[in-house]
Length: 233
Image 1 (cartoon, one colour):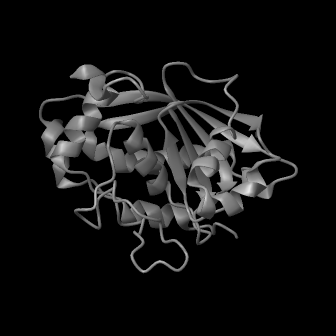
Image 2 (cartoon, rainbow, N blue to C red):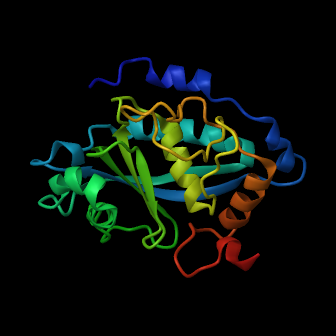
C-alpha cells in the first residue's frame, strides 16, 4: 500500500512537544545518541524488502526525534546501510507461529538482521517492509537492536512506533495508564482490535519516564540483558 505524499506533514501536525519537557529543559542538555540504520533487502520475501530511500528514513528519524525532544534526547543517524536480510527461508513461517508459538516467532525475527556491520556499543535499527502479524516494531534486549517495519498492520507508516521501540531501548516498559502515552502497550491499530492504540496520538512521556530514559541514554548505549538500566544509577 502506498504511503501517500502527505504522511510526513500529517505526522508533523500530530507530534508536538509535551509539558513534561520542563523536567529537563532548565537544567540538562540534549543527549545525542548515535544510531546505524540497516535497510534490509530481499528478492524472495516482500515483507523483508525495505522500500524507503535514505532521505525518507532520515525523515522518519526526524519525526521520532520530535517525540523525544520532550526528554532532551535525539538520535543521530550515523549511516544508512542496505543489507541482505537473513533467515528468509524461515520468515514466511512467522505468519503461523506469531499466533501459535510466540517464542519461535521471536526467534525468527531475531535472526532477520545480520550483525556483521553492527555499530558496536550504540543503537542499531533494522528496517523491513512489514511484519507478517499485527505489529509495527520490536526491541531485542539480547541484541540491543530495534526491528521496525515501514508499514503497520493497516498499511500506514508511523514514526511514533519507532519512537516507542526506542523507548524500550531506554529501559521504558509498557505503560497502560494513559491512552496518549508513548509507551502504551497493545497492538498499533491492529486488525480486529477495539482497544488498539493510535500511534499518531500516543506521544506523551511522564517526568518519571523521562528521568529513566535519560539515565540510560547517558550511558551511551541501549539496555541489554544482564546489564542494569541506567548503568546501575
